[in-house]
Image (cartoon, rainbow, N blue to C red; front, side, top):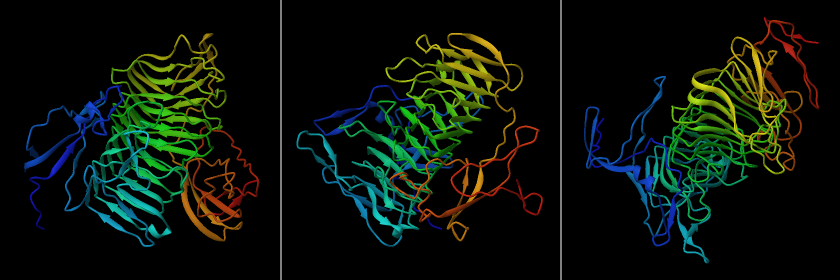
Length: 539
């Protein structure tokens, strides 16, 4: 099949190092953001391609080096082609936008959009604000009409506002797209607006600039809705400024949904993954990778159950502010925290209004390496906040680590660590009391399963199938069809208060002993043993 020569096409190369602490400034003369680090996102034209060698029209000016860990894991700079055959373009002072409100699915493929996302001057300031609803690509209140819509292979750059916006438009897949040099957000929809069955897959968000008004910038906002997926995406310098205010990926307070979030990457951000929630929903973050983010993860969910599993964090601190009030708490499982021989510590345990007791932060079968300290207890006193924390380290490994744990001088006296190594004695370390030997406090065997399959039905007797999904945790404290008490309800496909669920799968025991299964809730239950063949009711 004939293909035209790539000569003359525009490409962009991202930086791979850690950005400086200073936030971008706003130039009131040009009404544009100023940021020296943004210059490292270099644009060039392809002069020729021969084999695996690409020659640009002019040499690049900055290093875009591969990042390699001591274990051989390597990340390289993303390169995005900015040229497409179909172009939609405004101008710097006359921006265009794409607005779709349709009852039929759409196909938007391989479109190049530039100078989209209009802005307008505020009456009291020369700094322009966004024009509400006028984004680069905006699906607005299509509801069920947008199911089956595909946005694929597009690139939108030099945007004056948010870029990819499926706003209350369900069933849209956005795959292999690029958002480059935008303001405010790459992928986003409105706060507390329910959008269902969205898929964001293999997208690149690069260089999201603040707007000069509230200094807000983020890569992907993971808002409310059911059945949403974020998989294999990359966000580069999508967030800068305050490390406790947004990030490359954002679960915002009071607007989060339960996403299938897996195999995503953040690098060169002020904060990579930002979590700040106060509901009791269950979340699992699978294989999130971060390198050269200042804060790789900032976790501040006071009520949620969160499990981070199988990820790799390199060259950035993980800051755990909240200890969840949920009895399953906040857990990190089979994660690697690699200081890269550049950090003073890998994990920073921060104070919060929720003190920990039985609901400790748990690190289970994790690896800590290449830093003087693995976990730093930094629970400095804060007025009206309960800053005592407990952290459990279960079956963890420490490689090239000076001290597994340490306390700051300001840490509260009763903050403590409990350590149960893969083998040997268990210890408790209290800031004011030193180290003592204790009995084992956790299992030594854990499985690798990801949950049970939930089959959901409308009706009390499994009458009408609604949907299936894998539930990583069978514990739901906030289920109701009443939106006043549970904004996210059970699921949008559960259409009333009468519903039924069947979970199937296998359970792997952690101990060789007799086990008792129990259920607790407000309705009827049955527990069946279906192995090896015939169901038998368990009493």
